[in-house]
Length: 137
Length: 113
Image (cartoon, rainbow over all chains, first blue to last red; front, side, top):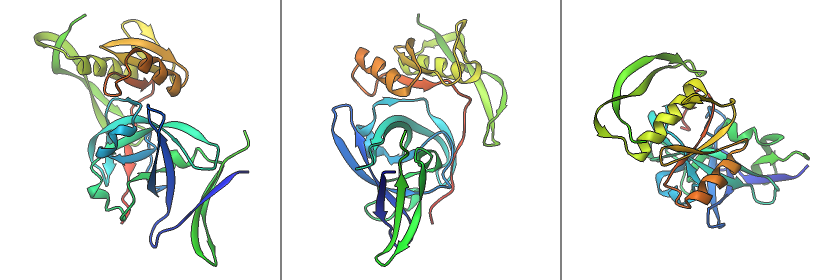
């Protein structure tokens, strides 16, 4: 089963994702992993990442760290080296309220994680790593 | 077809899967300014989410509907196919939208710190 791993930050798990633009370019983003983020949206990206979108959707309501009506768009992503590519719904928002670590440009939630056969974190001599496994379908 | 309307009529309240009460409105034809493309697309999207239907045409839950210029231009079984159909008609990502025929769901983002 193919697996991708990512070195954890001091106080959160992160994943690196390539977004495939309409022009066919791959743009990589480091995103915070938060399984407490639930709903129909899979990701939160910054408003300045509109270049990643492939099509818009109607806006939808959010609650919690982001409140109210949120702009949404379809984005196509893949995890490097995993052989998995999907198109999912991303919220496009001001990331300031999320207090993300430096270098982290958005979030992935439970709907995103459920694209994988297995996901989690493990400790090694080098520290913690977040992993995702892709099924053999 | 150009329609004029405003958010003048409330059609009730729907309880979402997330347990939140959402007021459902419907753009009603009234005298006023004509709708722009975005408003026409949103009117269709609202009907798809609420009724899985638009102007007598019904859709299956899970269908992906591409909207452009206030009209349905494609109905597909995957988001990728609907997006491809939309972009083949207009490559500008700011134009049109692709709607999944589902009930509205509130996203919950519980915070990271």
